[in-house]
Image (cartoon, rainbow over all chains, first blue to last red; front, side, top):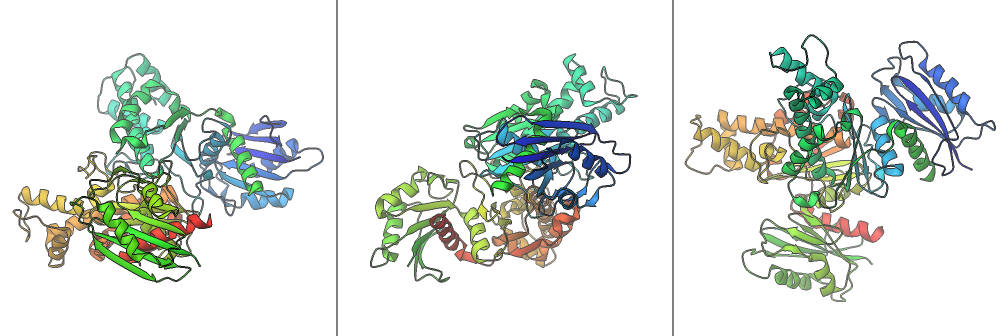
Length: 312
Length: 312
């Protein structure tokens, strides 16, 4: 019997699950709050793993999905946006020392893509483009049934590609990245800027309007809010066209909260994608799908990574 | 003994070479003019292959480098910019029928990249980004020692990615592609537009100034010509930063005529690349090199493709 412990390290929750053989459902799982501002997040994680550990202690591998840039070769977390004490943090080495089993780690967007390929909307495809569109825009890419990781594991940062060199400032400090237009943050920034400039809207400039507030205002017919999502959709179409030209995948999968905006985002996306593709053959047979795995994508992706490594 | 016939189909020349075992040099090679405007280019190619064919007729595979989009899975050439009679042309199938040996085909930029990885500037690297910067901007990408081809073989069209959504019109009809800024054609267009608008220069608006003319004027101190290359270099830096974030390669190789412009192009490129990378780790250990194989990259790339296929 093969047993894998899967970890999903999030800014708000730490989750652990035990998977056995080919059973899709976890045999055990548990979650606790991350409490990233309190010291020793790693200690809490160790405790959580002990809590789900099978009685006989027999585990073949640990897989982990982490936020922020991670080097999958060394298992070192460069930094995470929330858990500030993890900086150049030898995550895999420390777990291997504690539990004596091989430990594999990669970032959350890559592993969500891997999970959709193995268990979700991209099953059966060999070349997969996965986007998470939420606070930021992240990517996971499968090429010939292998996860794209790159030399230091820093590949597939699809949100941090320039589509408008003189565009708005991105969370990373650069200008005109796909993320600066098509993420929740990008949508919020556009609305805030327009309100500040005196643009009429049912939304008020004094309050912080979230992407969800803007989506609700749009559904009530607020022109500014509709335009904000249209711009996000237009640039998402430009970005995805770029990635079709770069990867020529057979499926594009969208996950993340903002990707659940429906026609508000995707009508403009569809028009833009068709407009920006250089040859119709890129769209031939191309499947565009919503992610299927929701909150479990981190656990299932970490599991898929560990399984792939054990099978290699 | 393993014998491979390599073909390099160009707009001006058709070349054929015979490679045996691991010998770097061809045992036979021959070239003729393409004469793309005369009918039956394929007939001339068959004759050329017969001319280099070993006396005993023993050939293990044919590899071919073709311009324009090619489907490497089916061996069909979608179209080529010069040989107009080749449209949805079953190139590999026709050669297999004529010579009874497996035939593998891919586009020239992909195979130039593969050649540099196998025999040239990217030897020993596992993740390679190759750019040809000449009339257009083309790309070839190696990931984990495998050529990136995509579902229909249309991947790695790196020049046709948007870096400035409202930028100048590209040869493909889209706006603001990397190619529209950083190719010879992009440099020429910028200068022509500026001269037309009355900008002062030692170049004259009445004549068609080639990228080479502009490079020469720049070396004599012409401010407009210097600026044209600086803009090309700036956007090349933005584009390469995008591809570092996407692929995280360990080497970037530049081939093609415009890439031989030296500091005129690469000083601005270097500044721009450093400015646009989101984390210094993308540049750690990154090798930036000039292509080593020159005119032979097509023949050697086609050979490498055939060897990889035979070994697979």
